[in-house]
Image (cartoon, rainbow, N blue to C red; front, side, top):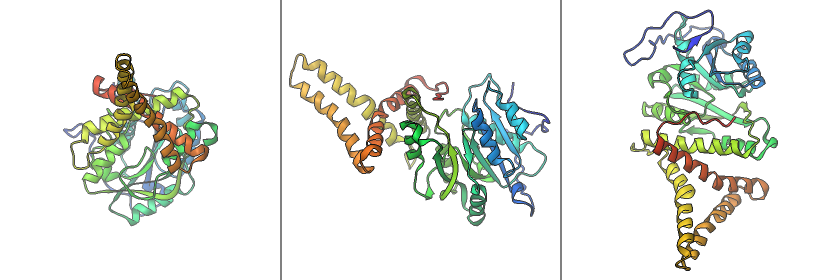
Length: 359
């Protein structure tokens, strides 16, 4: 079974030998801005978040394609009722955000009309801010060497939990030319297709991996000093944060395995830091404690190994301004190395994992 599009179905697309749909790269002639931007929304059981997401793009882009990954909350019906085209992913294959975005792109390319020059990807737990698409489109119009542009993603409810606040901190990156964008970004369609789209098999880290390939083709990635979207992490429990951090470690290891031998050596340092702080130092400390029963001076080694954790947390806290916010960032940055290390080991020992979900 293949991923399917809701009625009315588009005509079947021809296939290249590499398995990707044929490219029709025509661009619309002069016309309304809405015809120059398509949108692909991906989601799974997002509920009212999906309603807000679709409302933010319908009327701003055409077409709007919603790709659903096995929702049981009526999300496909909601999207269709609101006016989006709906792609249902085949349940027999593992879900990933990368696969969902590629399915939406394939549906877009199978339409009779020429492809629009720009494509906005939006996660179903996000909602675009008013004016974002116009600002991003104008930037791409003026900068033909830029393949993708993103802006400031903000957490909608940072006060709800420390985990939401940490996500908002994570999204706050400097504007200007950058190495990667996140899941929400406006892409130039031609280079996106030329790069081969996303890697279906990546369960996380698929956006920076795609951006690396785009940059290898000579394109630039840019982050604007502009409000792009609201994001609702909805992380209220420690276990959710732990799984999300574990997924990050898995993404580091997967990215390093794919591209770590290249000139940039991407994700190699992140993978090594996760293993050092989350696996090597705890193993050294545990070994020293065990051996200390026979050689007491080794207990000092264990104490020194463990003391580096609060010292590192305090260093980060001071860098981040101290007080409660700084301490949150310091403590959870250090603590996060443990689930990250588990994710790295999961990739290295088990290979491809199932989708690691935190919601």
